[in-house]
Length: 102
Image 1 (cartoon, rainbow, N blue to C red):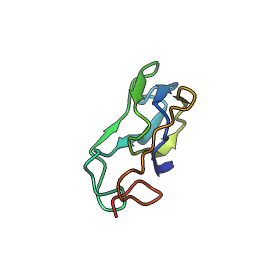
Image 2 (tube, rainbow, N blue to C red; image 1 turned 30 degrees about the vertical axis):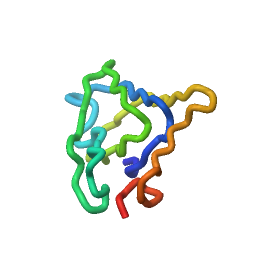
Image 3 (cartoon, rainbow, N blue to C red; image 1 turned 45 degrees about the horizontal axis):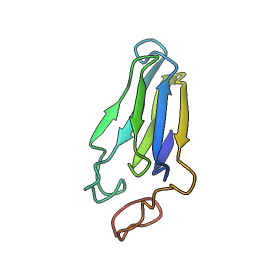
């Protein structure tokens, strides 16, 4: 499990290293829409469980979380990138430290 957050980088890549059908139960990566009132108020808009070897790419200002697995082992490789002096300001509107609207 990895709590809901924003990476505040230009791009995040999440690469699945294990097979969701045979390596673990539950889990996945949850995403909230940009219009969501916040992860403590609303359920995620989607939970993705990509096949092994499949990458998910998303902007760093997207609220996301690692959903807890109920059994097995889930492996992911995560990398976030920004050009020098190009960090995104994800808190331009009224939001708390978790990215939820206030």
